[in-house]
Image 1 (cartoon, helix red, strand yellow):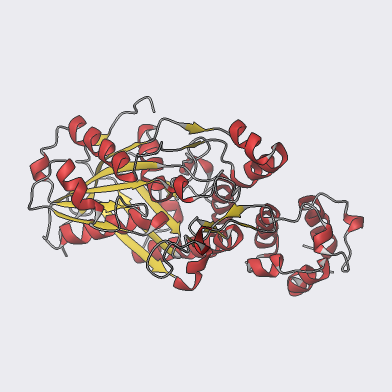
Image 2 (tube, each protein chain N blue to C red):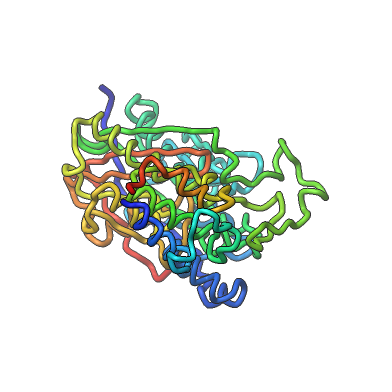
Length: 351
Length: 77
């Protein structure tokens, strides 16, 4: 058995600008937005201004976390940056962040590109590397500007997407605390349900891929924009989440009743409300933070975790189950017994 | 859930009275039958019938009878 590890501290960063419900009413019409609100529970969303990247949001969150807890940057020997909107095709954005954050050269740094599920995947990798003795203190960062991938006239995605970034410190904890188990999975047969089809190497940007196409519901997009089949993603979520949670709990010989808090990927309030009802999870054991910031993709889980922590729902000894799911199709869940030596959450700033 | 109960709840999703729905009703005649309504229909079917129908079953239905046929084994008379 390797060393135990856990989340020790966390915070997040949102862009200041809010794209409001009222602005989108003007763009898409009141009736359409009423439907979108009822089908998502998302009223407002934060969007990054031109020139601000996911890495900038992650950088700011990391600086706040390191400064607030007075952590020596030379102690960090693993940096994982989770993003689907990197600064460059190459190099890996984690290398840029390692330098910007002033971390030492003996710091393993790499990106994970998995979208919604990426935070839990990164926690699994950090845990495995600490457990194996490869590293001892990890900074897991997330940051995406998914709003920029959407065509402004596509109401199937624009009202849902928000931008954001987060920072989490992962380190060693006493035995039987921290990460108790992980459950990871992939169903690549659904890769086409959530995709930016053009702009990389399979289908490079060209005149043809920049042509606007209007779908049956009046949504406009090009092949270089994000496409989402919302019904397929919803079907995937309600099909994969309950059995994944069951498998994770079976691995650690616990039941739903043994979990103190359930934190799910904040895809939409509509989806979360249904999943919690379907699984028999009472509202007091959940936390939702999506209505005014939108679905922030791979940052959604660390953001809601931070908010739950600030709200006092994440306590020493509590068993917290987190699951994220989406693009890929990909999913990942973990159960954490909150450790005695957690440093704590960074207080909110006026976002 | 009985067939009549399902029709009544489905009518609420597409904003018509249940009497307007029959197996021959073209889905394209239902103005509110769109991607948002698909989600509500999927929740209704999953929650009340215990079936996780694939979205193509709903989006590909030409007439209301196609939806009923896909759920036939789970609907009580």
